[in-house]
Amino acid sequence: MKNLLAILFSLISPGLALAADTCESLVITGHPSYAPVAWSAKGEIVGAAADMVSAIARKLGVKNVASQDFGSWEKAQAAANSGQADVIFGIYKNAARMTYLNYIDPPIMLDPNSVVVRKGEAFPLVKWDDLKGRNGVTNAGESYGNQFDAFMAKELTVTRAPGIDNTFDSLLNKQADYLIIGLYPGQIEINSRGLTDKVEFLPKEINTAEMFVAFSKKSKCYEALRVGFAENIRADVEQGTVKNLLDAANKKFYQ
Image (cartoon, rainbow, N blue to C red; front, side):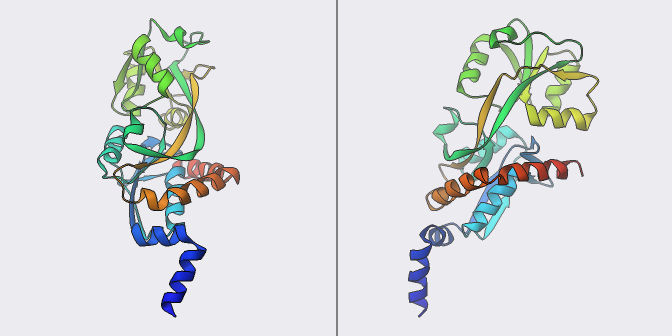
């Protein structure tokens, strides 16, 4: 009777049965300072993307989902590269990352990228060329998509600072003329540090990039979970679950 039930269960829900059999635990990680998508809290990465990934994994039969903060965005990516982390979330797609990550389609959200300057020192930004001749700063490990990354490397003078807080310090200390950052973490950093009278966003964003969930190519869980993750991410996006998670995470961050 037990064997018959097991056969029937696998026929009804083959993806769930496979996940339960081959992936009992999952280590997930993300950006430690990218609220409300993801941020560090007590050694874990929490936030909207973490909540979504954890819920999907458990729905697919994964018994133990462990969120881990590896200390920085660069180190989180290194952990996914080495296989220390099975899943990394809230990550853009670029050529270098695709060598060690299996991305899950569709993306979870669109993420606008912006330029921050000191208050009263705004300049016209119509095209990327308008950033030339000025010194910029951005967070170590960040990507802004293949096209802008290539332009930045070839045409701009942009230094990398370890952590979003340090990028703002570089801007405020006049070590940089502008800061490149995602709109959402930029807004939260400005609000949490009380910098609204010291810095401002330029009106035009540099681009809007797709943000994904991706599995390490060294993860043993990818084959078992990839179809289920894709189906559930699509449903979460279409049904507004991702937006609800972002709203809830934004409120949680300020509590």
